Length: 205
Image (cartoon, rainbow, N blue to C red; front, side):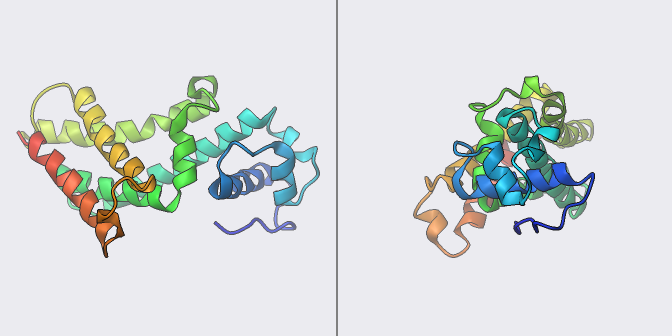
C-alpha cells in the first residue's frame, strides 16, 4: 500500500487517510507499537487530528480491521464472480483468494483475527462486516445443498469447517509452517489447491 500523501487528504477524508496510514504501519510491524500520535505523524497531520474520529488506539485498530474485512470480502466476491456457478468451483476460487490476501497482507490478517487487541462485539460496524465472509461461504453451501451437489446437514456447521480450513491454511503459510512446500516454485498455489480439493471431496453430496 502506498504511503498517504501528506497533502492529499481534504476535509471529510481525514478518517480514511488515518486508516490507510494505520494499515501501512501495521504492515511493517504489527499493531503492538501503533498509537494515534505515530499514525498522525505518518499521515502528516497534527497529533490532535486523529481524536476527531477515534477515541483511542483501540478505536483506530477496530477501524483498520473493519477496512481489512471489507478488502478481503471484496477479493472474495470478485473471485466468486469470475468462476462459474458450481459451488465447488466457487469455493475453490474463494480459498485461493483467501490465501493470497493473507500472503499479501500478513500483519493485517493476523490483527483482524487475533482478538487480542480488541473485542469485535464492542464495535458494531466491525462485528457486522466480520460476519460478511461467513455469509458468503454459507450462501454457496446452501446453494450446493439445494441442488444436491453438496452433502446435507447444517449449512452453518459446514461453513465453519470450510472457513476453518481456508483460514488454517492461510495462517500456516504466512507463519512459514508449510516449508519446504511453499518455498518451491508455485508452492503456495499448489498446497492451497490440495487443501481445498481435499476438503471438497468430503463435501460432495
